[in-house]
Image (tube, rainbow, N blue to C red):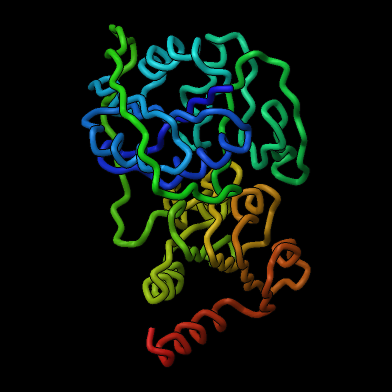
Length: 313
């Protein structure tokens, strides 16, 4: 069996989601190759070649792949699939954009957001917003799978795979990248942070998020939010953690003023340690929390901030 993993990167460095997707691919058995598609990705391909268990790295360097748009990615991937039994990619925004197109071109069903691999054709994935887990078996000759990387460990380093370069994708393509607006922050990215502190509707307003910001800065944490807080306009959309936001699995997740709707739990319940602060002792968030504090957050957060200062943070 041969498996192709599509690398997650920013054209400059390889992201850890790639290592975790390789772990999922190795659980299927067989040979694992990594596709690095982008622009100016020589160094990224060299990083991918060091992942333990990777047989070969396939590099495709072209301007149309800088943002991994669906048409260009499909043009690269589909011709390669004659040599592979499965293709796996991280369940991130970029890959969720083109993987359904690849599945359609291959005339197979996509298996999305897998959290477990039982065999080469059997996977575990969340349904009902993560409230239940389904074990699914695919009879398709080609498996198209996106991987919820928070559920897998990172593959180690130490590999020495060869790097092959393939021809540019053939165009022209109808879609093109125009621009993007990114939130600039000195804090770590939500999906990469080891500590995340999130606020919910209970914060009351965007101005009150400054209390969370102070604690995040002391802990070196990323700041997140529930959908309710985002919909209320307290914080930008890219703060959202949950089924329709970002999935995170930090070492420590602190939920402040978050009731714990199923959609939010789906994006953070894989966190190693969960701490919840909420004045409602019946809040669902306490069902997944390792530590729970029933308290008024407007008293608890200043006290936590003060104690962190005393501890030298």
